Length: 307
Ligand SMILES: *[C@@H]1O[C@H](CO)[C@@H](O)[C@H](O)[C@H]1NC(C)=O
Image (cartoon, rainbow, N blue to C red; front, side):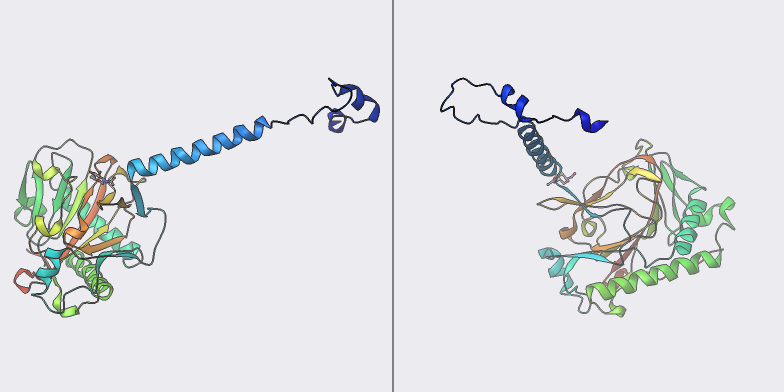
């Protein structure tokens, strides 16, 4: 019986066990609880390690793949250049610059349809390196170490349907509306712009500069016409691929957006949103970049089926 193993106290034995050095005024012996001290040291070390790693990586997750958010946003002060430029486009100036993520805007069936368009289109080509694009507006498709026009490819003649373009425009319009509402701008002052494209990223080693998607950049500097950038993820971080997280580079700490199928991430395109995409180390990452401008000169109309 377990009980029997415990220390048994009986006045008789107790007396005998206490070592006595002097019969009279022996001070009470200091009880050092080594176990407690050990646990304390362990806890302190743990805290120090945690603090060290947070400091060392300075990587904060803005939104994880696992969670589903109705919307999550953060306001950021607009960069000076961005604010100055938008003065020329009344009605298109954001209440605040920043970032916002929506997970329920685009339905799973719509994501599936778009992923299917991307896969179908990219099956006609694809980069030799890790990054491929398909632009339904211009028809640009990565092919080997260059690009071809998918609308001119004989083998791609009946690849797309009216329905594909309908879905694309429908989803694009939802994103447009969400950006308009979130940033507090006028619906008819924000236009779709070029380039707007599907992307596929694999771990294949880069062959050309077009495969190097991981360099930190500001969208406004890469593409002059951009004022609001949005990304719609078509596959899931840590399930479909590894690496490939989107990272905002801030002074204090970097913030990651983990791609989640159906997740829309939108942000103002100025230098307040310097960012990069981590290199994909495993699997395949699909996304759509849908870009908007305030400048009617750079507006493009919805893509249409070309026969
Ligand atoms: C954020 O990421 C950039 C680019 O990878 C890196 O150079 C920088 O050190 C990171 N910042 C912090 C605070 O960790």
